[in-house]
Length: 318
Image (cartoon, rainbow, N blue to C red; front, top):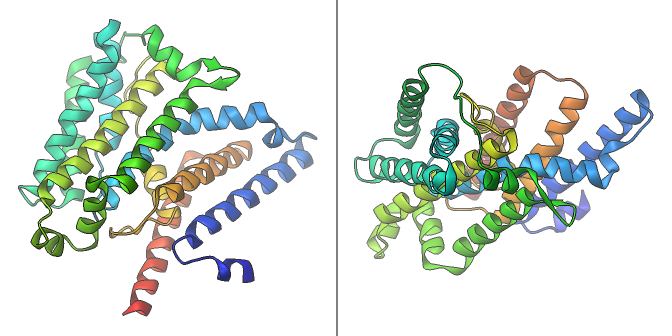
């Protein structure tokens, strides 16, 4: 506890998330030792496999953080991911990945315009866009599973390895570096923080807040589309509802990492740690054969709990 008190307020959520990650790994190890007589969670091959699977969530969370820093939310992630995967596998060939990313670009522009120009609450607008995408994809497939396959490049990026390390982890690392640089080294990143802290003040200071909001939603949708293309490559095909399991964990990872759900504060390192926490929490719940329903309950409780903590901190500052 004394060690946590010495940590700066900005880094405290990251330290807490790291501590919980270690606790989760220890609990999972103790459980497998007691029930199976082995400790797979301490094996490098197992850890790499979990990070490979977690890379899809990590990319989604990276984009989600951009939107949450603005004080908004992107609920269109599930079907943006799914639509990108379906269109990539449908188009195929060298245009597969560009087609998937194009879906993310279009969705991001639509979301950004709806929220920043039309001034519709992001929760409502992005949920509507998600519903539209679901209808379009059901119409596209006729309600059946798509009879398409991922391209060799998609499978390479998602399932192959270089020097024993999954390529998907390298892709996640590339996205992470890009997001971190944007947030810390560019005017656009500083504008995101300023707009999230107080949009009115940011506008009066000369920041084109509408463009910033649109840019943040484009980043979120492009990340979701990238995750969809990779997930289709990992599964060798696209399927309906493949993005449904990523929304709550992505939000939970961002919040667990210390990003203020109401915008203006947060570091990408925290989101990265939050993703790792969620990945290993998922791993332990799978080992314990926890059902998906209980996992969703846990994610929801985490988000509500962190909201209560942030509300209490804000009240103390006032």
